[in-house]
Structure formats: structure tokens, C-alpha cells
Image 1 (cartoon, rainbow, N blue to C red):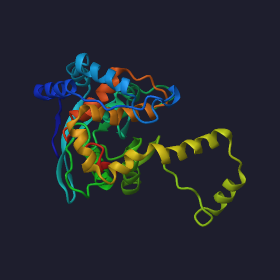
Image 2: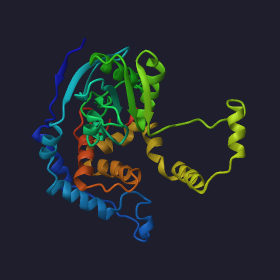
Image 3: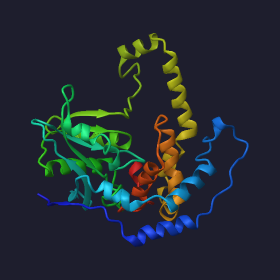
Image 4: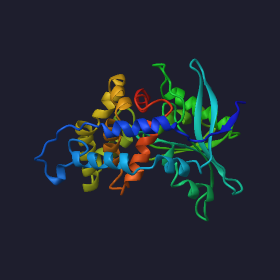
Length: 319
């Protein structure tokens, strides 16, 4: 079995100072000035918001305080061997519950997230209550994310992420486990369920389901039922949002899944560009969640200080 070692987040001071230098020298583009308040985010993060956050990142945001807080969590690292790809270092949080018969839970993040997605809910998961089970929580940084290794081989896809996560759970002694996954993590989780189900993966919950529309040939009875059932106003509105996302909101995916190297130069070199790239999604995809400046910059800083590098994170992993 591979050895498991404790892990401490400790970004070199030179990288922290380099970040501040880049922020100080930031140049900003012009923006369209005749947008209405309702359209302020329609072209991306508003210029005034970017300037404000960049100023805060440079002048007030304290990465060392963030490190101290994050390091209170149980971080670990281990070597994972992927068939045909070699060995990688995988970073993960592992919090065991004190509750008898707690369930091993593999918690998979998405993009533009990281292991930090689990931090707020972690105490609730390990404690459980009268109506909810308790869990032994394992929250890895997927390869290319956070403080796990990056893969420089073009064929490292979801299948390899699933293999890495499964081997991690086995190395921790969890022969059977359940999964929670969202966004990109859902794609990894579906492979875990299909490849290692029955014997190992006992249940899967996701907040990012990708169901296939029933057809007359695939599910004839369900197809007829769907055709005969009128849509509610909420469902019609939801379909409208889905259509709008297809025409206005998924350009990032087309870029990352086709020319990831091109966008990678900007994300690796410019913390301002990285902030704009990620913050737009945090704003648009979180249902009016009241983000604090420190939360936004913590999420983005984890990308900037990642082991794989900001230009690689969330790029070819999206394919």
C-alpha cells in the first residue's frame, strides 16, 4: 500500500510576493458603458468590480491567514499509480467520524471549485444527527487541481480521475463507499459507479445530473408520458435558462475543451485574468450566494498557487 503523509499548505513567500507584484502592475481593459444595471454582468465581470477586488487582493487579503485556517483541517497526500500514466501525488482532506458505523464518503469537487467546497459542510457530515447518518469524509483535490499533481499527458481524462479516486479510497481502507459529486466531479463519479459499483461504490448523489432525454426508441412509455404531460411555468422557465446557457454561458467550456493551451497562458501569467475567469462563474452559478471578498479570493488563490499551475487547472480536465 502507498504511504500516506500529512500535508501542510505552505506557499513559498516568493510566490506570494510575485502575486502582489503582478497585482500592482495590472492593466485593465475598457468596457461598454451603456449597460443597464440588469445587464451589468452580461459581458463578464464589471470593470469597477474587478478593480475593487484586485485592490483588495493586493492591499488587504491575507493569504497566510487563509493558510493557517485551512491547515486546521486534516490534510494528507499520497502517491497514486494510474495505469499507463505513472505515479501522481494526490492531496486530500480526510476527516474520520467518531460515530459508530459512519459511512465512508468520497466528496468530489467541480470546476471552478476545489477541495474547499467541503469545508463548510464537513463538521455536519462527520457528526450526523438523529435524521442523518455520519460520514468518514474524503475530499481529494482532483488531478490538476489544488495541491495534487498535474498531468501533462493528453489522454488523461475522466477514466483516469476515477481510477485515482478509487485507489485513494482503497488505500485508506474503505473497500466500500458512497459518493457526493457536483459539476465535473459528477462525470468522475458516474465512472466510479459504473466501473466499481456493486463491489465498492454503493451509492451516488449528485447535484449535477445530466439525464438523457427519453426517445420513442429508448424509453417508449416514458416518452409518451412526457409528451402528454404539460410543462409548468417553472419548468418552462428552466428550459429557457438552459437554452440561454447554451448560447451565452458555455463559451468557457468550448475554450477549455478545444484550445486549453491558449487560454492557459493568460491564466498562468495573470492573476487578474484568472480572477475574472473564475469569479464570473462563482457569481453566475451560485444562486445569489453572498460571497465575501475573502471567500472569492481564497477560491481563486488556491488556483493561482496550485501545484499544477493556474494555466493547467480546469483546462484539459474538462474534456
